[in-house]
Image 1 (tube, rainbow, N blue to C red):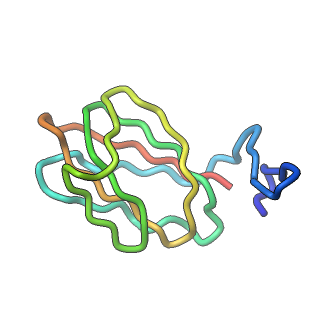
Image 2 (spheres, helix red, strand yellow):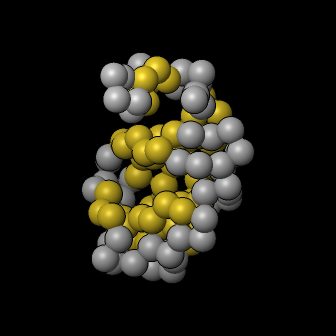
Image 3 (cartoon, rainbow, N blue to C red):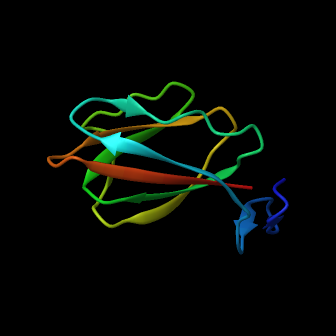
Length: 103
């Protein structure tokens, strides 16, 4: 279990705060682009975007326009495993996806 999480009565991890890890950016374009793999001790990620986009999270993800939609200006947190990546593709306008790993 993460050093910043505790468990509720049924074992779900609950985060009050995360320890900031490495950050990276991925261009949001009309091409499917992937992030660098997350560190092995990563278990949560913070994502922010400056344009509407679609994303997938996994070992070798491929984002399409049927993937999870993330609106412009969003900040979201997702569970992730070490060595996972994020794949992103734009809705209509190029931009930047900002990713920060947490533990």
